[in-house]
Image (cartoon, rainbow, N blue to C red; front, side, top):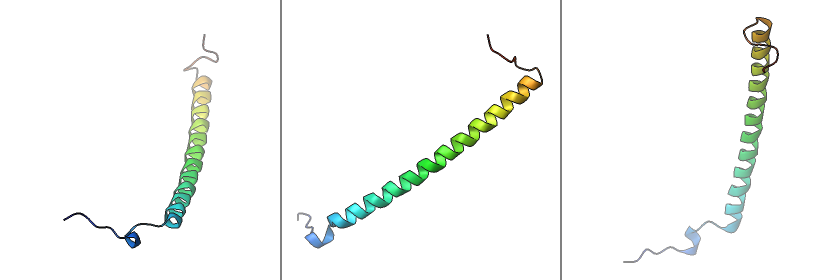
Length: 63
């Protein structure tokens, strides 16, 4: 017996649009968090390099 799906079982375009909008909002929020984490990682890296230069572990300028 073939699978029967009535039209009331299918999501409406409006529901699909709302889900897509919600996912887009979530993706934007995730991107903002990722950007913030990358910025913090860069600052930490810069501080580490500065400290290593201060201690003479790495040269001021790489040749």
